[in-house]
Length: 138
Image 1: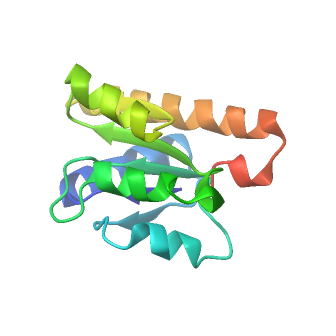
Image 2: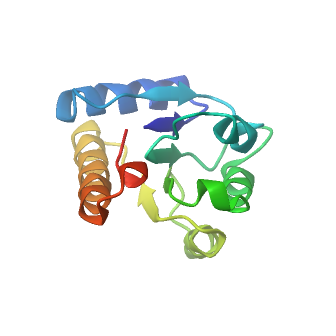
């Protein structure tokens, strides 16, 4: 699983939450969206799921999402937008750009952990149900 998050505090909270609920999950973190699609294209193994923050300096999450979805080779990668924005226009724009899910980041850590667990469990189950290794969450 690749986490694209520029906030060190949020990245640490994501790691802490997922280590508690999914200790077997392989986590990779990056704080930058710039060049991410190209980096993914150069890999031998793609992450099964990308947890993507929208509000990042430089290349923001919207642009990263559009860049990922512009490459058919990355079509099997699940992209879950995980952000603090609840604006309906933001949600609509993300789904229109190809996001698989849009999840609001709660401020309360217990709820934060529950929401993350639910998203990862959902996409793990969806990946295993499809029978495709490329769709499984790594």
